[in-house]
Length: 310
Length: 305
Image (tube, rainbow over all chains, first blue to last red; front, side):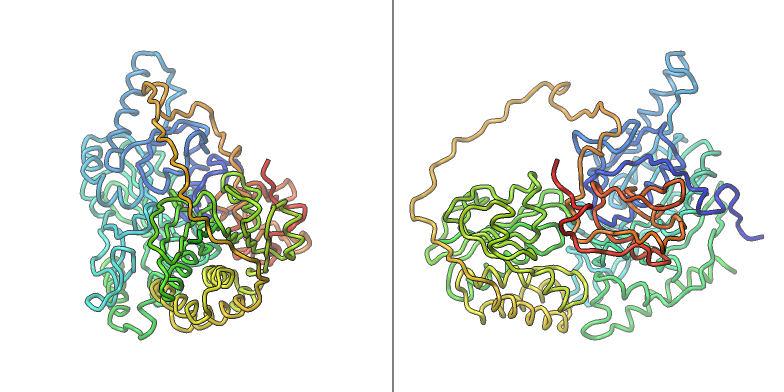
């Protein structure tokens, strides 16, 4: 029986109300903001955002905030620890009767891929281990975007960043493979993990609605197509996000108590269609086509889908 | 020595244009210095770059406060007080504006004292590339011409700088052609040499530290970001053709900044004070009811309030 959406079936069920207001200094066409805005429509206003340093620092650049609720800013490595503090404070206040239960808030960590895949990994591991009841929203733009697009542990094989340029030694750019943070989280056995992409708003909204029924650590990995770092026109953000999913490079899936379900089965276009759109992969096509590198990316995707669909 | 300050929006190529001028001057045996300033860089946010060129070694450092030449990549920046485009302007400063207006009109419209020259680089780029792309080569070409640098130096500088950015050869060729035509067609104004006198030393400013409860950023207001308008980030704005709209909500759903809301009749309503002009709605509209129009005078024009 294929995966079914239960709450969000039609585009007009997406709530009209805005919970992340305009006026932020994020780049025009930011895929991460697109995903966050859609997520916030389901999360609502009763939220404390715990924001690790990164692109999303610009969300609430002093003295402005796009949120109706609270926002706590932390270093890149300590957002889950900050979330623990907020959660504990809320729990204590409610237990003592100083805060009515109906005023309870959701705690949502906002972290970029740099903090999620690298720096905050140990404090995240601790938070999951302690069973902290929080949402972790990772906007994955596959690089340290805020500081000028440097290599992160989420940068995929073959991408060019300012610290992994294509050179004579490494004509294909990045030689590292992207860390599988989904599986790292799953190994911790949290109740809910999901990947989302902004081009699939119903899938995204459905997953946030589902996650609300679980207590404990909940991860959302949002593909955040980045016009500035990935070098394409800002208007193409949804197209890039769509091709990432349609080529199978960004599988849409969820894991409930460890059991993985793919929520969308793409027809799997060739990865070239996705790579070609972006300047960070241009060196794979010009001046000479690097067949081997492209084949490597394709084979990795094929192997993944073969493993999960058998 | 002559000092040039470039102003553009993140992604428009002001930084690269500044490098092109520095490199072109260097190739002619001059000394050159260039330094961009963009804080937490954002596509669309105001950026500036400072270039100094001269025959003697350059001892000055830092931002250019009193430029001899100001190159403005986007006329909407002039109205944006945060961009501080006309800082340090005097009657002897030459100003170039990328605008559809003529030089005289631009001087009157933007109330710039001194020497104003203008050319519609955006239009020339659109004709060469068919889409709005970075203006680094045209901006660099204009600056080189006004400074009296040779066409060959410009050519070598553009080719070198764009190759460093990893652009493919075919694109560089078209940029070279575009740079050459901008070099030819920009109306000339004289650019003066900065007088030899050293600028007066500025007293060091010592920050006063408040206790953390007062001095640290704490936002007590709720949802006040709409007070910060980002409408000036646009070069192109989405415009609705109401007859073609089928009310499908896609523009509303995909807008990253949430500046599109749907009316009761399911027609999109665009908040031009905050639309950054990313064109996602234009690209995604299935019936082509949203079209991109170049930011010009009109009802939707953003004005600093």
